[in-house]
Length: 350
Ligand code: NAD
Ligand code: TYD
Image 1: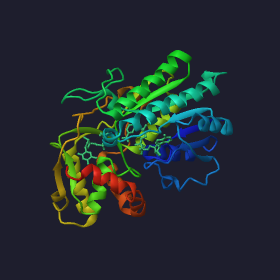
Image 2: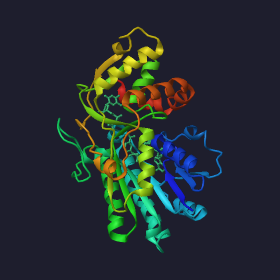
Image 3: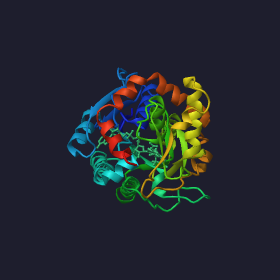
Image 4: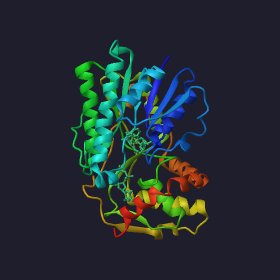
């Protein structure tokens, strides 16, 4: 009987992973450990919070005693580790927070797993969720494969790269069974509106400028969050310990083209005259160290397990916009307080 500790389960991707595991595997216990930072929100999990196989523990992954206690209380057999500081712009403002949570926090999780599972590492899995940003930036050609050399440029990606190395080091050194997956940019319901797509949707709803960094030709590969959760489920159950898997959307968009598509869909959904929303587009000062292009080669997970995205970008984006339009209370809760001061600091005089 698996008792899976999912860290960061109150965040964007974590909440989709928790929901999927709680609903799909009633025989497992799912323990969500989350510190509830600005990005963690238990409202993301309201629909499953009363399920008998779901448990929430408010805990910081840097707190070894707290994580140890959770292990003992629930008899944790496996970990899916998502808790992290996840926003590049915030990492530029306060890099140390990223070192503490993403590096020290991950090593703390590994240390507890090493201690608690020492009798039989083979019976347990430590699955670490990472990002394609560790590979750095591509030019106009090529893709990141699992063998691409790490070359992070932002404090966020450097901290994730470091945590990935520690996870692999614990496999090599101690024999802890680990898997790492590196995924491209996610989007979907519950996405915190500091990231490109939900920030633009929120600004469109509020008739605010749409801040496009630099020349707007930076390219990202977008994946619907529910497809990422499906991939995580697959790799958790069928992935090979010691291996890395890339997950991607086969779906590259230049930021400006994406924002134009969003504007078009929003005009329709809000009943505006075509061309209304795009008038809000405003080019602003570029992000320092901005990676030009990310693109994942996801052929390993595709050929080994048959995984591929289940929705087109237009479908996923449309569902995402609908979710934000019908969850305005959620949006107003997460955009009050801390968000306002972050937004003002990040975007004023840009
Ligand atoms: P998020 O910022 O939405 O959520 C992070 C969660 O972790 C929040 O619930 C937060 O409260 C929690 N958390 C933060 N610090 C913590 C700490 N010290 N202790 C315990 N909990 C803590 O992030 P996300 O976008 O859902 O990303 C989840 C994971 O997936 C991260 O590891 C991220 O690097 C990775 N990832 C994200 C993307 C993406 O596009 N968002 C893509 C690839 C990989
Ligand atoms: P983001 O969602 O922060 O993800 P990441 O930097 O991790 O890829 O940004 C996606 C792209 O959108 C990136 O090229 C930066 C750009 N961007 C803007 O142009 N304006 C914005 O306000 C934000 C938040 C991002």
